Image 1 (cartoon, rainbow, N blue to C red):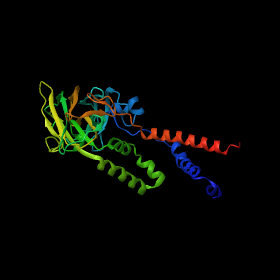
Image 2: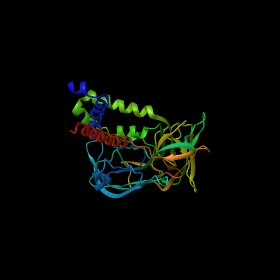
Image 3: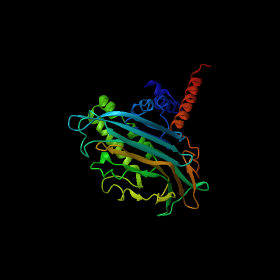
Image 4: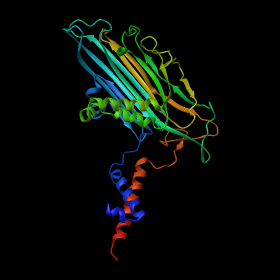
Length: 370
């Protein structure tokens, strides 16, 4: 108390700044997520691979936006439970591939799944709809877009639109014997999904996906963990602007999944199909685009293979207002310029730490005897 009473106003301000920043300098966080390229593979064979063991359930994300690519081919004779206490032995083969490249705006994915004959000595095969097996591959790109008119931020007119355009090229090979599934876990589809977020949406999604519910509950209790999960979920929902989805070619899904409100049906032909989505952002926004191929095979089938091959590429482009210059956080996305160099939160923290050092040095100089 005496020290504060005898301190000149500038010395008091310096002491307060030092106290407030000391802990913050040590705890400065990482940069918020504003862009990335990612992929995910999954099959009965892939889950035993080294990559799966070294990743988070097969999810690979590059937050620099650099291209990421992976593939896995496998074959294994499995003992599948038949739902009646017995086991069905048969060969399963799978091939999964995914590539995401933000710099070219390209997505590629393919999944193939095959079932052999039921091996001698097996218990009876399950009836249709009782058990199934799956293989899937997905690729995702994400970025944050901002817009300027000269040296000023672009002023969007009411209802003024931004349009994403996609070129879709792929093949679907599903045997006629593969019937419409009776459960959502046995659906086969190729989809393209676009989500638009307000600024901060990518970071909010990252925080939610990184949240470790069990660890949080162990440290703070179940009620606190649930409260935090709800908070993070609400944060994501609050930043969601709009979304669109497309089913690509033939599929085997429950009624209403494809061709409905959320997933429009896209017919594939000899040339790439063109799809687009227009919306009125009203300002800067963030987005994610995911291509997913997922094949499910009912275990009642023998000697059948289903393949969804979209490794031919999804091409991404856009149309912005004529007077707007488009910038991207990645600086990679085609036809965009790198976003202006604004200090990230951790950069502000570093500058604050530098200020802290100057204040400390000034304090030492003032206390030094003459």
